[in-house]
Amino acid sequence: MPRKPLDVVVLGGSFAGLSVAHHFLDNIIHQLSTFEGAPTYRIVLVSPSTHLYWNICAPRAAVSPHLINEEAVFVPIEPAFSRHPFTEFNFMQGSAVVVDASARKVKIDGRSNTHNRNSGTQTISYHALIIATGTSSHSPLFKLHGTHEDTLTELRQFHQKLESARSIMIVGGGPSGVETAGQLATYYNRASNPRVPRTPKTITLLSGGQRLLSRLPMAVSNKAETKLEKLGVHVVHQVRELSHMQNPNGTASTILNSDMTVTSDLLISATGVTPNTTFLPKAFLNEDGYITADRETLRVYGQGIGDRVYAIGDCASYSRKYLADVYEAVPILMKNLHNDLLSHEYRLQTTTATPNMNIKTLAKSASEPLLGMREGGRWEDKETVLMPITRFGGTGVVRGWRVPGWVVYVLKGRDYAVSKARSAVERGRG
Image (tube, rainbow, N blue to C red; front, side):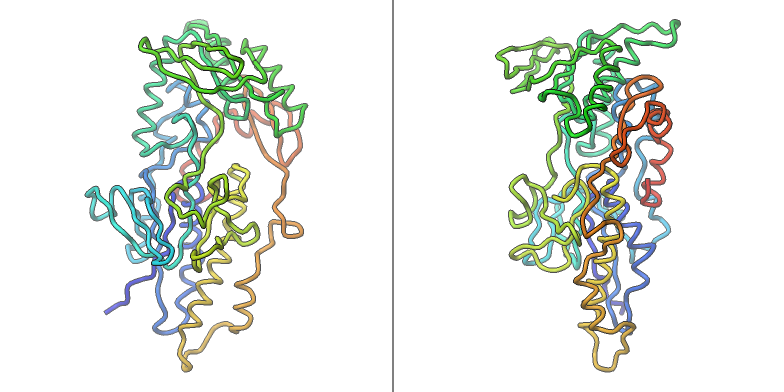
C-alpha cells in the first residue's frame, strides 16, 4: 500500500502562495524522494478565495466597471494546477484559525477540498509550513476581504454609490491614496468623451504627513501633488483620521485630529494594511504582528516553532509590501526548503541506502542562505513604485530611480498589466 505523502502546507492563495506552490511542483518535488522507501510530498494550498484578485489594478477597477474587465481581474486557482495529480496537489478553500506548532497541525475553517465542498472545520498536519497570508487593507477595494465574490460585491456596491456621489474623501497620502485620487479625478473631472457626460466630483485627499509619498524622493512627491491639483483634487497635509461613521442618509462623517468633523458622500480608507497573522502563536510574531522571518533564509525561528516553517510576502517582517519582494524571495525560500527536506530524508536512510549527496555538504548547504539576489547578504533597498495619475502619465521610481510619466503609462497605466493576471495564477509569475 502506498505511503501517504508528507504535506507541505501553504497558507495563502495570492501572489506569494501561488508562486511557491508552482515552484515546488515544477522544480523541487521530483528532486526529492532520493532513496527507495523515502517519503513523497504533496502541496496543500489553503486560501479563503477560489480566485486570485489582481489588485494591482484596484485604483482603476474601483472607478468604473467599464475600465477593467471583471473576468480578467479575478482568475480561478484550481484549473491552473489541474495537470498535477491529487497525490501531489490539493486545494482547500478556507482560512487558518489556529496553528499548533508543537503538534505541527493547522486548523482550517471554511470549505474543505476539491472532493468535499461541505463547510466546516478540520485539522491538517504539516511536514513543512509556508505562511503567505499577506495583509488586509482597511478598504475592501484594495485587497480580498474573504472570497472573491465578497470583493466583487463590494466593488459593484461602490460603483453604485460613486455614480450619485458628489464629494469623495480619500484618507491616506501613500501610493494607494494618490493613485486612487488620480484615477477618480481623471475619469470624472477630465472626461475625454463629451458624448458621455459625467458628474464632476469634489475629491479631497488627506495626507497625515508633510507631503505625499513620504517614502519616496521629494521630486516624486511634488510631481504627484502637482498632477493631482491640476485634476482638481484638494490635497490637505498633516491631517489624520481619528474615526469615522456612516450616517443614516448614506454619507460618511470623518473625525479629524484637528477637532473637525467632515462629511462626504463617499469615504475611501487608504491608510495602510494590517498583517493576516492573528491565528499564529505569539512566538511567531514581532510587536507589530508581522512574522519574524529570518531575512537571509525566510525560515521562522522561535521557541517551540519547530523545523521547516517559513514566511514570505507581506505578512513577513522582511517585506517592504511590494510585489517584487515576493518574486525575488521565492527562489531563496524554495532553495532552503529543498535543502531542509533533503536533510530530513537523509536522516531517515538506513545504512544500506545510497545517498545522492554527501551528508556533510547537505547539512552545510541547508544552514546557509542563498545570496543570489543580495549584495553582502542584504535585501536591496531601492524601491519600485509606479502610480498612474493622469490619463497618459503619472509618477514613480524604478529601482530607486525617478522615471518620467510616459514610462509609468507604458509599464502600468495603459492597462494595469491585467493580461499578466492569468500568468500569475497559472505559472506563479506575474
